[in-house]
Length: 621
Ligand code: COA
Ligand code: AMP
Picture 1 (cartoon, rainbow, N blue to C red):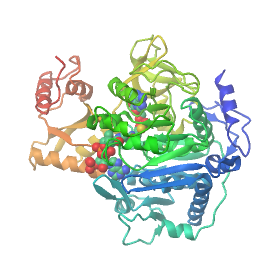
Picture 2: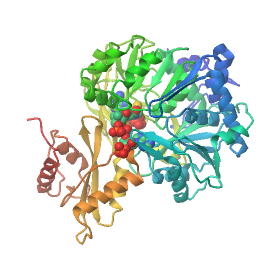
Picture 3: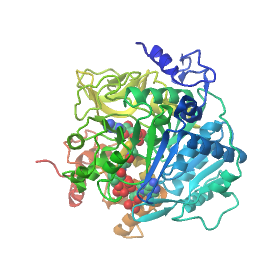
Picture 4: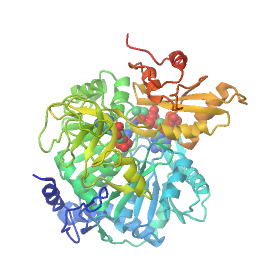
């Protein structure tokens, strides 16, 4: 079936106030517009439609929080009521169609309520992951210029309570833009003591609000902005539109994940990441499924059997998590003994993404659970999987190390530096032929030119994924590494460029590099290499500790930046470019060759010795 026909059919499965008459507007590449003249609403599709179709009493959302010892269930009708009321509270504060709202919350149901309430009003939410620090939040506030911020008073990490509200206040103080309102969900673990003039308590806001109906919006109206790491400290505000998201996510639930109403679907991620947007909040609800919000970790809350408990307790049909979570469980319970205490027989499949899934983890989880473990590849930009074994269409043989083939709607190719398409087996840049399907990003907030140049300029006619790899004779895609400065730490996408900006700001640092080194648990960890100014005031150890602290306060604990050392010099090309890729290969004990353009080859010996002293740069032989 041709792609347009496929999407036309898929569009008929969703609710439109006015169905689109045009499926794809390709008049202005790369700014493609799907379903351009359609009018719809994401919240309507997620909630009102489901209630209208008779799912009012079905559980829409399950909340399970081992860190607070609490559980809750919300039927579609209950969720609709809460969302309508909270939308009313936002509307009372002047939030309307097109206005932005920043949401800075942990994994609590109110985060989903706030997102859906924005969608109800046609307001554009931007959820910021709680592991990011104030300065990162401030950058997003200045870029999105929200009318209101919705936050919780705190998040709960194992062993510590993270007070979110002071972080929000600090971010607003740092930002040039000052949102007029801050709606605070006070949690008993750390309620806010001193409310500011712009603050209102979540429950008070709802008490005084009237429920509101959905605002019809054009298909291309932005549903949300989600900031993600690029090569610099300025994050990219990925914009997802409304109509495309509804159509693609709904299609993906049945065709890729093979779940349908009223199946229970669990994505063990966070609402702050794209997985949380697509597969905790919107996708499962568009499909009439029951979704699960888990406020806990794979281990330590309380033990490595936590995931198995959830699978049993809620009869989860399909689960989705990052491979790092299973590496964490395996590390603590290598035999998977705790699984014996649980009945997970209703589980049909485990999907993994967010980072490359190493075959050992894939085999371990598959053998233990006795279900297919499906590696699938996608990105914040695409919003839903690019490559996957589509269980709802046909299960292909599983090849560990590959996320299988391109999903219908995507044409994945491998090209060399000149943009020439490569033969099967040849390694190059992974690109996707334009147009990208519905539900993928339609732009970058406030940065149309960056959208064009960062993603569509280098390989004309293609979207540049930023990943490198190859495709085999059977069309299986292998994603091997990033081609840019993005690293993946415990399934979290981070920019080494952003970390370098923090390091370079230290008064005693002359120059620096941050590279990703392999880690058995988290996949990758950042490693900082510093060259100090000749007249540095502080000792090397003091500077190292200072920059580690600075990354934590300016980017956030999620960066997991703990490895840092001082070197005499950094290897460079004759034109002065730091040879990060070579250092990365050395640090990871991978084969490397002396770059022809290197200025002084002896520096690499110094770097190798330093890295070896840190327990890195160990080659297999
Ligand atoms: N709010 C505040 N702080 C947070 C946070 C949040 N929402 N999430 C993480 N952090 C903090 C953690 O407390 C930790 O701080 P610390 O340095 O003081 O210990 C730091 O950020 C790193 O957290 P995390 O990446 O969770 O590492 P961890 O060592 O605590 O746990 C794993 C390791 C593998 C168990 C965990 O990373 C994990 O479950 N990863 C899966 C990620 C995922 O689902 N990704 C989504 C893609 S599908
Ligand atoms: P994010 O935007 O945070 O979802 O991160 C996207 C990046 O994570 C991709 O560009 C890849 O580098 C990596 N990634 C995600 N899924 C996979 C996968 N299944 N295999 C290999 N890499 C992956």
